[in-house]
Length: 275
Image (cartoon, rainbow, N blue to C red; front, side):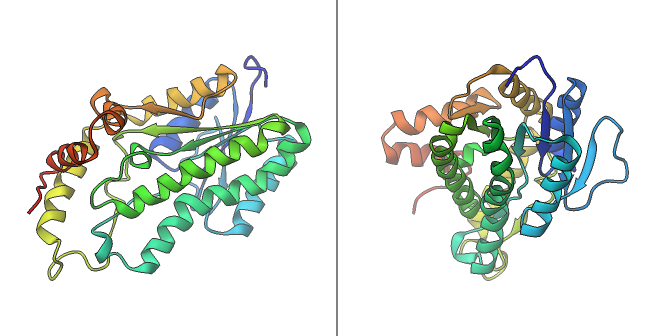
């Protein structure tokens, strides 16, 4: 893909936060942007186009992809951003909540990839940018299923890169640290969290830190600038990080420090301790 030419970009989860920031920046840069969400906003600017897309429904994904292909003839770049956070002790999460978390954060990406790949293969060109998380490299306490969904996304993307390389298609991961978005207020809590849970005190302690860090996170525009860079830079590596340096350093610390030392450091960051 020629970086000097405008691309046709499909963005999932674009109603706010990182997705919205990507739509604003990429359209301002001259790319043709189709921003999607389950309920497209009435305040949609004319700089980009809104489409309804629910990543948990095969038919919704296919309709949105078909609409872009009918209008533009191609999709050059997909930013798979749709997702949400489930928080609570693993024991307190229902199996149904686990299914819903994985259905959105992991299988939603798979649905979009499956719908877009045939047209990309035909053109022998395309790029997937998957919004992962530092929680996809480090298991975050009381965010176990969120981390599980992002760990799985990392594995999926590593495999995807190899499988689609012969067709001239690329895929990469972007791992943001804490970002100031509506993820915080939209967080879903474990069904059995709260009074009666053996984990209540520890969870509430950790959750205060989690929410404070998110509210003090980098603006979503920082992530959007990184997405733009990846879109226009040419060949991409398997993963990149973005966010505060101290959080990005955790990726290195995990591999450098003894595992128990790293666990102790992580626990201390969330106000937790061993018995």
